[in-house]
Length: 222
Image: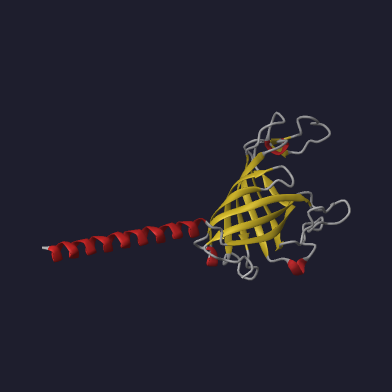
């Protein structure tokens, strides 16, 4: 009887130890899953020549005669493109009145040998303020967008990363967007990207810097 009780205790202790080990491994896995694995940056110069708006769009309500536009109001859809450069290509303090800041006035890249991809953005103007919102939003969120970072110039679509979220109109103010997937090495990508508007380029639209926190491990430059 004593031997039988001993064997039962050993089995019970063994199962308890196994349970403790399993829970510990699960905790480690959860920590690793939450940890940003890759932090990588790229710069984007947004091309004003490529932007197209839908309705509603009308003049600047503050000066309809002097600034007829048409300008996108709240609810207006849009699409725009840009070029992707390696991190650090675009100067955060660049003045488009002095230099091109990444794009020539006609939208061609100022540094064609450095271009590593094409940036696509579509969305809607959702900011309010300035009576009609849209492009006249003074601060805070002003559009909600889907962005595609196409990182293979020879085979478009083969290596893309996709993010979704709001965008702020404020300069030098980082904000986060969700990484929702991609293609090729990013087909299972999850994480977030931090976007910061650096200023304008010679076409009249923003330059951006994007820092990606990707899981599973991937590098934008591979």
